Length: 544
Image (cartoon, rainbow, N blue to C red):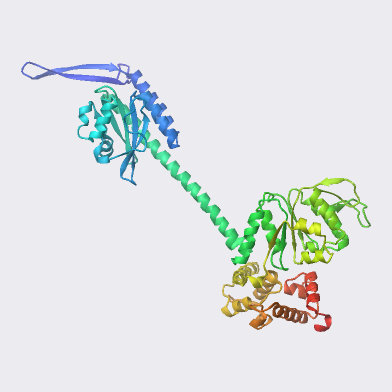
């Protein structure tokens, strides 16, 4: 402390004064002010610390350590020996050895019990060697290499952080007694910062590895959930369904036209939505149009739009579904019901990517991804001249067959549980028990209306259930097992389907359309039910 009360860093040497007899007579004291040197050392240490702590990548960290050491303590050789618990040895990482070519390089493993690095690591105390002969207690091979490299003194400093010994930092020079106590003290400060930086870098590496692994696991689990359990609201795990979903995954990233084939009620629209949601167009609009539900005279206007006054009743301009789907996906459901005279205009719009509204001559460019679906045999319709072959082949770029529910009976239990929970939640009911007899009845039935019919039936069962057990009207499913199509010929299945439709028609007193009609009970569209009735030879006289 100075006379004015200010403090300063000092180096003080006190020497005892003794007389000829050896008695203590006093002391001499020499004080040297080295504030500037201390401030320089602190600034240098701070600079080195900042470099080290900011380097989280291990390779960049080694470069920062080497650069920092050259500033703090000039040397001929420097290395890190980091303990590897997997092998129980110290792994050498050379930092600077431009003029010490005979010393070990990267990937060398040092024994803990037979090297200066191991002694400093074990004792957690700095080790200084002032001359080559002081290395006699260590490995002769190490000593000979040390001498051949021209090194004469060295300092090994333990790397300790949070009570854990990580390894050692080694600095070597080509002159004897090169490390004074003051310099060792500075190097210990550097070593503590190196240990902290190594610990941080290792933690950063582990976090990055964990993050990458979690990302991979998340992607894998999402893939499993989509393809095996609930692919875009599609419930099931049967091989037939999985094959269809693999096809969806294959075609979705492309812009190819997909044709979804399958019976009514099998979930063709869900397949189309899954393709859209997995495509690059998922952020744009998914526009659907049911070609069977719109009168043929209005379908052209629905698809392409019209200008005001284009026809009687066109009191304003209308944008068509094709234009609405620009940059998105257009889903044409029941594409087999498109009138033959409208098919050339649709084909031109798909091929040329442009069209005109009704009553207009202005060409409108459009970029849509088309997905079509049908329950009809389009190939047969082409042969019969009821569907254009050029449009058929344009639509059939990538066909996806969705199998009927009777061919994926293993999915019925999953679907039943899914629909029970869905409708019970909507009706604020708690239904958790489905008897084995009920489930067996579900699995025996052929379900001509497929998943749509199954859901409607389950919804009706939920309405009838007042407790925790599902009460299903099983009398509606009372068809002998040999009539369900399980291992029988198509004629038997057709007979079962005809019997089921007749029973429902009788219960609805011949009413087909409307919320209480047979089509709704069967989970079918009115047009589909009429088509089935014609195919099965069902006339009014059979159920009236």
